[in-house]
Length: 498
Image 1 (cartoon, helix red, strand yellow):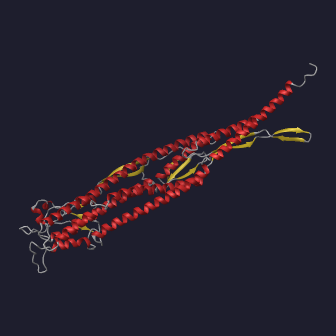
Image 2 (cartoon, one colour):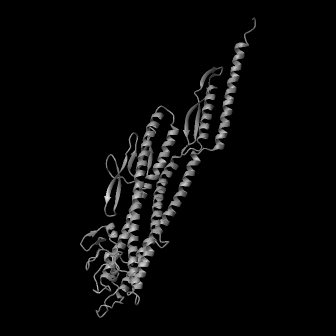
Image 3 (cartoon, one colour):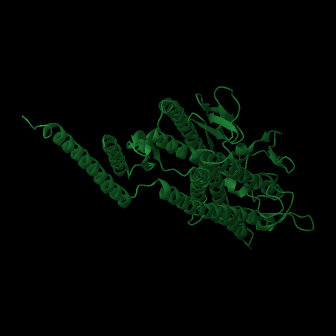
């Protein structure tokens, strides 16, 4: 009967533990496994008989679906990846916001319109029209430069986040290793370290959001956590990650690579939030490269046509760049095979240098400098137009919608190139939004599946509480009855003759 009391007491304690942890994150419902104790042999007139000796607690186990855990960890990595991509797309879309007059689309349209106006009859004679072409050109260059600066800031922000998450991953793997040791130590002397196992699984849940993981449980109860072919945590050891800074002059940023601290070998997270950040950074760099190609279009193609025209100053100035330096007769050259721009000194400009070069020629800054804007051209007869001429302005305005494989933007017009970039950005962002929604739905289903096995059901626990309470009372009552029988035997018999 004492064993019955102990068994029901342990069961009641476990029910209470379940109820109090019903709202704890990652808690797995625990249950007591009981079994009959070894029987006792007694002699009877019919021979030996086996008499039961009660019940004992065999183990206390937690309800856990290992298969559901593995599915959850795999999808958690996917969700982390697409969530990181979605966050970056939202920020990049905010940079490329063409919904008001401050966007690049508006600046391109205004610059194009200014040259169309210069190309109308009598338009080139107007000082106002020339100022408009100059000012819209300044704004265009400033906008492209500001977009590049914002993208650089976004890259820096992504790298800051990357560094923080690498530190977090190191903390998580350190926690898993400590729990590995504690679990192995406790379970070596019997029993299951259920609460420690829950804590360890919670850490794996967190880790799976950052990187791709697969988990194998060893014979001693410890976890081996493998990430994309690399064992981050094993029985009694772990691999610590670190980031290494590298200056990137091409984009004017500081890059960070992830490697193992001990071996200095590169680490690829495979998928997860870390990979999402890395891919977002690569895409942001491509966005800067796209801005550089647009800048190269103006510095090369647009300047080439501008240098063929003439200003309305007394010297009939020609061979002058609209964008970039003021050196006459020397322009920028785009190399389509290497996607690089060379300035008039023969210096190859990198991506960020190409964007920074997109400033209106300082020779046009002064009031008289506006007369150097080359709206005039050469007639078919070879004669230079008069001061009211607009032939070159017309040709410059057509460049925005002209397709040519020799330009920095390739076989499409500048307008189509920028429209295509925005269309691609919108499509990718929408696709990632859809993927995030899908992953959330999948994770909800998997979480529900895990909860169905591991979650605490209040009705079930209250039912168990009543059952074990009744069992405890019955065992107590049986023990009381036996005590009364012994009392009667000892104190109330054998009194004849007293």
